[in-house]
Image (cartoon, rainbow, N blue to C red; front, side):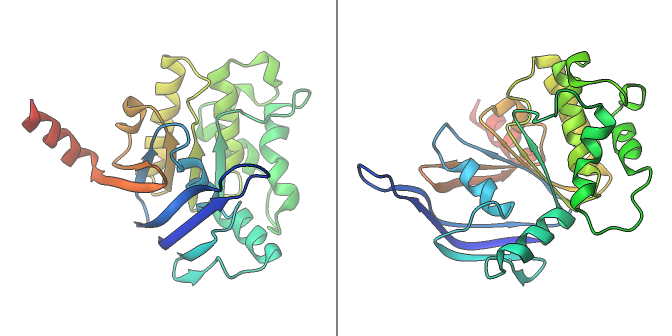
Length: 234
């Protein structure tokens, strides 16, 4: 579904040396996978996520989505593709403070070309367990509930791919596990999920872990294989 080859990305600062965020990165993600991209701060994981989500362009390399070369598309074409096929969840919830959960979730529909949108917001909130909170404002919700609203907003256009950048970073442990359970449920239902995290425990809730350091992929293992390797090492 997602295939990148030889991706490079360098940031040029006004002063000082250029920063190579990604160096010759190649990665394939099949439909229905649940992949964690893990690495320390500054490793390049968020840059990689931005390129996968068509929020940033690589300096070199190719990106194909279902066989289509998306790096070569114009800005409007990329924006349309992103709106239809990709949902985003971030560490900060980005909810409008004086707007209900339902209204927050329905915001992406304003930019959609779908003709039938009635009921999609409620359906998305029901899928994350917030059917009884649809008229609550963010200030009336816990951090975990606010992130679930953000997940529902990412789902409202029924995208095939969900990209989550440190989605548990602002949550306590219980809320983080609840959010990861939602992601697991969504993946079991068939949605492709790519999740960026620095937390190894969170990554272990995914099915595959790709580790990136210094802008390069240094390991790529299925979680079962990783657990078996750790057991052999003990």
